Length: 272
Image 1 (cartoon, rainbow, N blue to C red):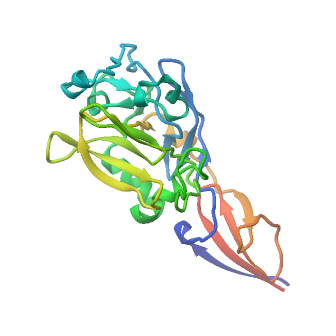
Image 2 (tube, rainbow, N blue to C red):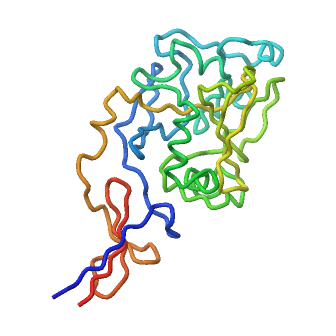
Image 3 (cartoon, one colour):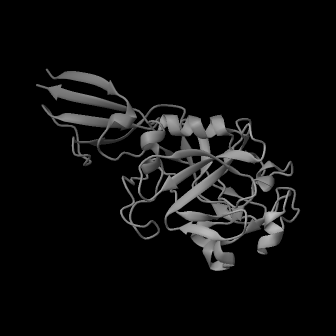
């Protein structure tokens, strides 16, 4: 008769890479752009940077490449990195914070810009700011500069280094880093909280930045828009891996890791 020895492990403690998300249903913006989405820890996020040129009500967001005009804005605007439309794919558009804060909603209907606390919910689930960044970056050096430290993308967030536009107009950081807006202002009302990934670090930074710089945007589904219907209604086994992270089948007298649809793991040893 087999005996099963089981211990529950916290996801972030594993040294091998594991998928921590389930695919979402996707979303389409007002321009007709489609985005892949992920469900992770009860939140559904876009897995791509926003590309829309309109608010959700159909009104246009101004494209403002001129540096002097950009500097003096107190309303929404967008640009492409280096004013080059070829950077739209895969990097998306760069928006100032006034676009993010506009009541017409930059995100698709039923979606919203994340608050600072919603970003924290995500990064805490991924093990905290010190290690969450690596789990949120696309693997390899096709987009990221080497060494792209500790990138696994096990969150499915697929962060890419879209750079930024500073408030005086120049562009920096394509291939090196990316920053995303939150809706939350800092105590200094000229600044708002952002999140930052960098090719050299496995961490994700939480910084307060000037509202008139140009950054990337990710949207999160409204809690009242059916996210609970998209979450798995039961815990099902996705796969079994050995201690090296290789997929395998049930074996006696061997340490195995069981990955479930809710993102949890179990460590099991089945002894004869």
